[in-house]
Image (tube, protein in one colour):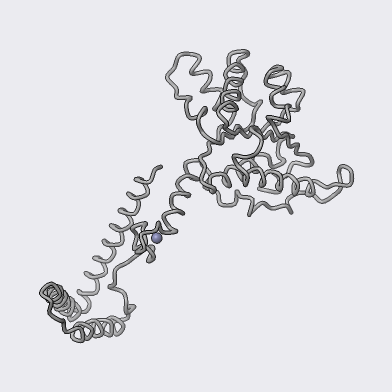
Length: 311
Ligand SMILES: [Zn+2]
């Protein structure tokens, strides 16, 4: 999605509203023929007043106002709103142009651009955000050093929200680890939403999809890996669930992490694997990169599977 796509969306809105207005006019003029006459007269008066203005003459505005008042009264009499035949604007602030009268971008333009970016990142679920993050889903029974799962999630939310708010200032890698069903994917999407809301581009890939692309590229198929090496924030979800073709895809994965680091880009990695399993599956080089505190901030999720409560 680009700015021109957003502008095309405004064209579509204006056209739809214009069609609706024409439909209303047909409906009302058929029901109250006098309104059609008034409309005709009003139009010719307005054209004349425009000509007067060009000729430097003054216009009889009282006569125009009288026609408007009579139309509105008739509309109300016939059971319509007084403004039923006024131009229709989805956003009155910019009259569906995206730009306000003071030449500033309208709030609706910014919202639309953001919604398009979120949709592109497949983040259409409004419940996925730090604002909607529901701590009460997590148990408040103490499980470790007197801390409950809810305490730990509160802390995780704080760390991850800070990382997203400081983006791209934090560590190059954020590693979210822990068993399935503890909310890791949810948190990674909250991060992504916040980063996109702050104006950056982000992309979400499951490890399965990512490694399939690597595999296809390796097989000489035409795939475009460039976005992976260029997007400011890349989320890799479910690392460890992809089918493993040893060495081949691991090389790609290391290159990806390394190139992104060199380019100053950030990566969030979500995995159910333990650190030992990460080492066994991906080898020393990737493991040590993920464990190095200069590159990577590790966040461990603990506690009970909350997905049963979420459905
Ligand atoms: Zn607007």
